[in-house]
Image 1 (cartoon, rainbow, N blue to C red):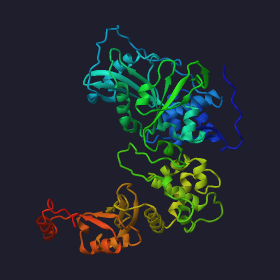
Image 2 (image 1 turned 120 degrees about the horizontal axis):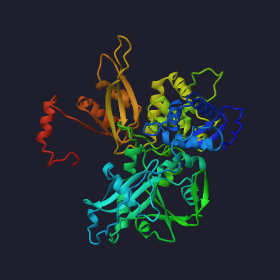
Image 3 (image 1 turned 60 degrees about the vertical axis):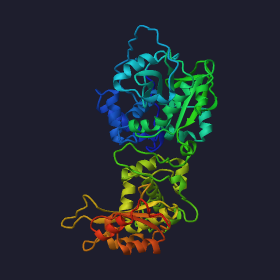
Image 4 (image 1 turned 180 degrees about the vertical axis):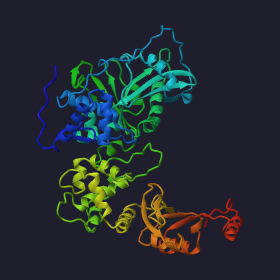
Length: 537
């Protein structure tokens, strides 16, 4: 039986469904239907991949968001919006697990807990891991989606098994504890992991082993998740059947009980009662997990990309009020014509600045960051339409602005609201790759970069007939770097530069001395720094 499709709204921009970080509109539905019609021989996997390509829908690690897209297509078909080809295999079919004859396990009771190691299961161990996980009272059918299996062992002796997967879609106690709404939950739920299975193997009876294994697992869970799926984990959760267990090991490992479930389990697109009331336990993997999950702007999380892109937490910077970002951006002149303007300049600039500070390094990344903002965040950025601008709108607007003027204002503002005492600012000169213009050489820039965040707060162009040395004063002239530590390479080890940093800017410096200054190098060697450190009075 095929459900009759719903009538689509006449407005193409009307939201039909919300999925994770994307609002599905009528135009999106038409694109999906067109892909299915033009490729009748494609399976669901090929269709989801093509949809990701058309929408440029990627995960945080840059890969296509295929799993989320396939789930979205199934939800759309379940509500009658689209019609997908029949799956090649029956739903619910699982990989066949070959069970071995039961053998009496040796009793393990006396071990050194300090030697216990918790690590992800290797590829050659997965079959054995799945077979042993069948001992769990809930059984085991396999892991789907974002998930990691772990083993706790001493050497080659396995002691316990753990399985982590995606968080529960709905949990009233968790939502109340975090303090996020439904829209924000869909954007941040991937930052929560669920401890689906925890099994102490048969024959293992060691006091405090369970809590020790949980503690060791949580220490590396977030980093393992980042390497595999491109984002970190902020919160861990699990559901304990109170008729069987009291959750003692979770309490001993620092987990917090939030409340009891109503005895329902998800089945397809709905929920069915199973009668087993469970207790929800949570454990913050990051110290500020609750604050980061409920913050208006996405928390700064490390990326799994090869390059090291550092970011600043936008939630800690003043956006409104005196000396806020909004007041600063109001001084920028709008170069556009008034006719046809949909988004105010201050809104586009606020989004672009915040996205770049949050790690965006391209126009597409800025637009994607903006599309994931909550309604509260859009209001704070002075958005009247409550809709993020497109990549084209952002690109064309920024290309018309005076980049040098805007860069100087934003850099000074970031330094003004960041305490730089004892923090480092690096002087770094680079020639822009691929910026040649005919016979004109590529520009060479001298930048001031924050050590910890990797954010450029000021930069000046080095002329063809000079070098970086005389550009230091113009670079740092308008920056308030009092109390900071300026670092530079051997080129900037100059007396005039040192006097400028210490006397005029009230900062400190760390310079490199090489063989090109033999007298100074010998003087430093004669000081015998092992007995006369530079910090001594």
